Length: 103
Image (tube, rainbow, N blue to C red; front, side, top):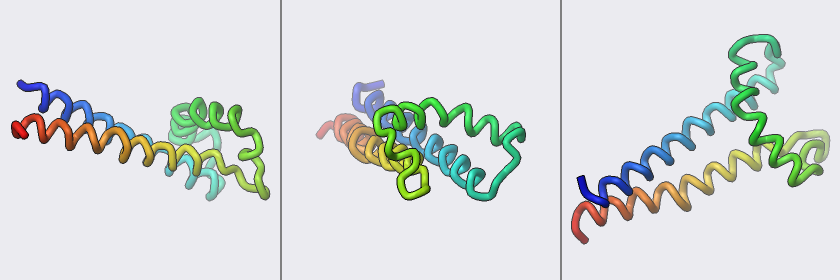
């Protein structure tokens, strides 16, 4: 196993991990819109996973919690996840592929 495969593997795990977290965040957003039962185990799980990250963003930017009557922190987190996917994970995958191919 070469260094290129290792780097590419790390990039793939990071990319797909961020993608899965994006889906979890999307699930939380949808459950808040439809007014799902907050005691539902799935809703509780979505909140437990996403709340620490949303709380950090809210602490950094308190105005986002109620800007125009809307909580913008999930959108900021979603954009941050996309930024990480395309600025760190995707280049790692490409770099690993180049190294594995010997270029």
